[in-house]
Length: 220
Image (cartoon, rainbow, N blue to C red; front, side, top):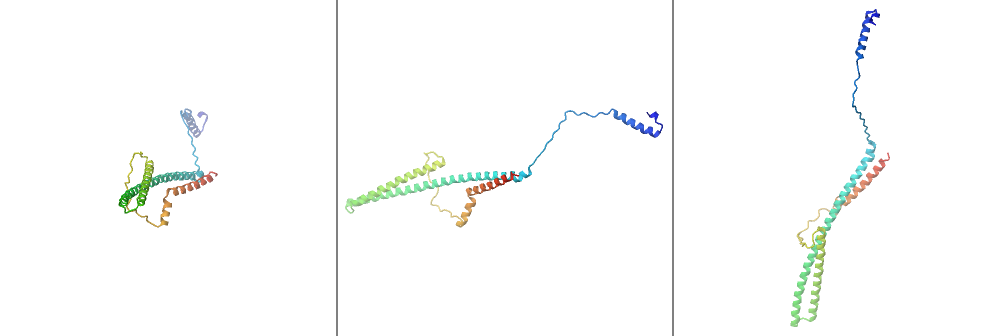
């Protein structure tokens, strides 16, 4: 082909073209085996996040906090019942001590009246009257012992203690009670802010409000 071209510049240009074609004649594209392809798509509901998901999450948190406060309120209620049962037992034991002292005093008075009746310085009706007083005092002792038994049973039930456990008063009931600080209005405000039952009601109200927002946001 070069011999048929007489122009030297054209021969040189044609020679470069033929050399380039000869160089590309032995070229092969590489074949890669074991190739894998992976495509992924991420869809994030921005509108649903702010209008539905976050309000629903807040509602769930409010419900959880309200349930924790309800458990705390129930625990406090059980503690209050235990205190009431304990002081009821203390009151019953105090009444029993007073009743037994009244019986002792009535019997001593009965002996005095008996001696006076024997000496003729008192009428027999006085002896009958004092005997009635002794019987009434003994009846009060029996009722007081029954009250102690009932109060002891209540305390043992709340403490899950066996029936044979003897209960004693370990608190100094004669000690002065520390007065509450603040006015009645201030104490009422503190009670409203601190009582777990009131706080739980507020949490439930907030949860209902958040639920309404979540339901309204899910419509979009």
